[in-house]
Image (tube, rainbow, N blue to C red):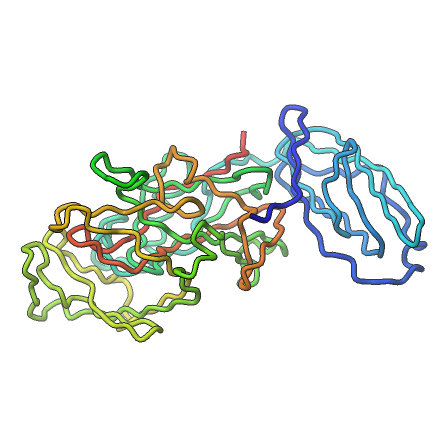
Length: 397
């Protein structure tokens, strides 16, 4: 797996994340015009320090002889207060120029929290827990439901919300940039668990959600379309994963005559019609355990569509008679895919890729989007639906 050049320098715990755009100019005169580094750079914890050079040559940034970047622009972020000696070395046409400075990391003046501090969007797909978590009251609007999602997710005492079937999503953010350091950087909480009766290891109730991350590079306080990158989990590069999958759900007639199945619990097997961009069509089943509408009542449109990465179905009927369905956890990189205390619920920002599947180097992230990554009905369990119950920065202290 590709990894960033990221190093820990410890006085307490200091970590660096570095990123840059490769120099593309070849004008030696620009090198002679470079005036070097200033004596010192000051930055607060969890803020990104940018030092552009924009000259040609082989560039090396280091601290205490440890190489932290070989890019023409250094992007530095640290969660630890301290002073760190910075060296820039430029090799060009047999000449070596060395420049020295220092980075001073200070305690932030703002009051930060390691947890979700804002929820920007909430749009679940159809599902049996829609209207329950969070609770819908008659007349509630999309904005009302967003406010309820905020109440559920913001802060340390968070509670879960459902995203419904494939594509349903939530977008949230933090009050600081979560640094991209060595190892895993943030955790997403869900309600996954491993079943005691499951034969396969690391299996039980696991409903993987795709994770997108964004670094607010232009500092406008919101995730722009060109700032989103997908976390490439363990299934991303497999041929069983479908990119740019789209599904459309059609609003049901709640007063129509149900078409019951033959299992007792399946009270309407032709409840909500759906179609996808692969030519498939089908219905979402209504079960006897949840009798409210599965189509969000605050959405007035007759249909709505989601697009994203679809994972291979992970649930199967272990019992063979429909009494015990099991969802297998994928190895890493997804939300609601493993118990909250499990390492697999921790996410490494270094796994982020662009639309072409190329790993990108982000100094950190400010926003996260999670959406249900599977389109499957798991018998009496119902649709596979990702739940999110919080998130936090693993580096915050």
